[in-house]
Image 1 (cartoon, rainbow, N blue to C red):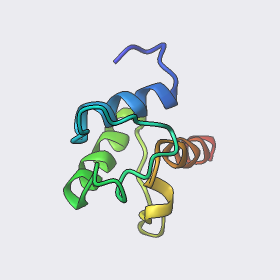
Image 2: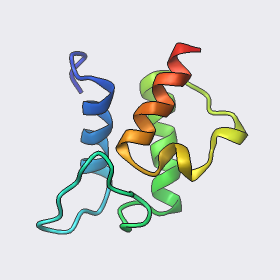
Image 3: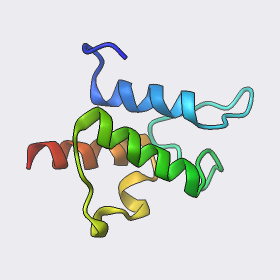
Image 4: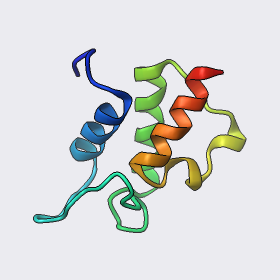
Length: 85
C-alpha cells in the first residue's frame, strides 16, 4: 500500500481485499461490515492483525468491541484516537 494513502483509504482498500463482497454491492464508509456479512469472527481477527502491523498499535481488551470496528468510519475513528494517544 502506498504511503500517501490516508487511513480511510487504507482501511477501505483492506476491506475490499479481505472481505467477501457480493457482485454489485456498494461498499460505503458507513456499511456495517458484520451485519452485512462482509466480516465474521475470523475476518475480525485478521482485521486486528492488519491494524497491529500497519499502524503498530496494540488494542486493549476493552477496545475490542464491535462499535469500534463495525464500519470503515468507526475503524478510522478508533485508529485516529489510538494514534493520537
